[in-house]
Structure formats: structure tokens, C-alpha cells
Image (cartoon, rainbow, N blue to C red; front, side, top):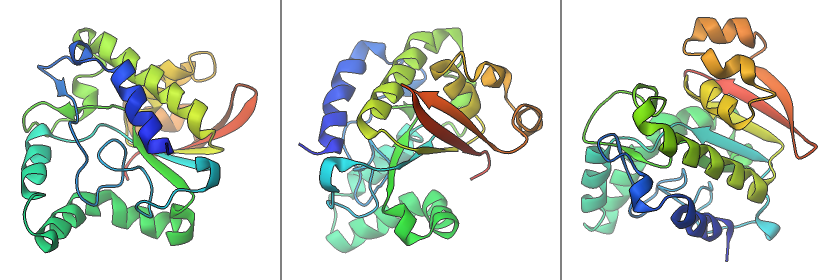
Length: 219
């Protein structure tokens, strides 16, 4: 069993159907063709090529899994011809993917595991970010489940570096490391983040293991 398969099993444990606030978030039912970020994809750059012991020193953490409407459209088209399916997959990942390739380089991308903070799709076709929903009282249990699952990912991955993409990540991670990142709990803008973390990164510890978190708020 590879790392992605282990995480898929853990998803079933941490996210029973009833945990989803279905007016706001719905589960990812299956992978998309050529997607990379887990659980939309395997979580690795080279599809199907897992490392010995599945150790990836860098974890790249995006926000939520996107819009339900877009996901369902892409999923339905994935059953078409292989060539068209590949084109769909490439369009799904292009927004983040091309920027990440420029930022990290292809060789570094092979050392990364790509995942999401929020293991759910935004209901319908809303273009609002997770910040509009997941930090509200209605989504409290769901948010906690995602934070616990993130910590479970850390246990399996044991990364040295987390690259956190998006404006909501400081607040999300503050809930995962309340003692070390308490100052990040009220960050909801680039201006506030600059006051709390002027260097753009922070060094913390997880189970006595040093962990560097690099924030890219506008990926």
C-alpha cells in the first residue's frame, strides 16, 4: 500500500458522510485525470512513481479542493476519449501547476507531496474561498476534522518543509499548532500577515522535529 492509498483509507475514518456541512462543502468522490493534489490526485508529481518508504521532504498545501460544479464537469468529461481527457486534466492543474514549476523547478517538484488543507469541494459553483465558510460556526466540526487529518498527514509524511498556498492557510495552521502559531489565528489579510510574519516563513517543531512553514499567500 502506497502513501496515497493509506491516506484514502484515513479519509474514510476522519470524514464520514455526516461530517460534511453539505450546504457548504461536499466530499470528493474519486480522482480526476492528471490531477496532482490529493485527494483529487495521487499527491505526487510523477504519476504512479512512489519513492522508497514514500518519504517526501516537502509538503505543498493548497486550500480547498475547488468548486463542486467544476469538479463534476471535469469528472464527467474524464470518461471521454483519452486525448480529450488529458486536455481536461491539464486545464485543471494549470493555474497552480505552472507557477509551482517556475517557483520550485521540476527536480524539487519530485520531492513534494501535494495536498489540500480542506478535504472538500465548495458546494455548487461559488467562487468564494474556503474562508467564507469553513471558519464559521456551522462548519466548526468539519474544520476540526480537516485539522486533525492534516496532522495525520504529517505523521505519515514527516516533511521538513510545508509550502502553504493561500491567504487562509495561516489561520488554518494556527488551529493545528495553537501554542506555536497563536499569533496567526487572526490573520485574514496580507497586511496582517506581514505584521505577524514579516519574513514569510516560520520555524516550529512537530514531535520534536523541526518544521519550516513557508507561506505563499498569492500563489
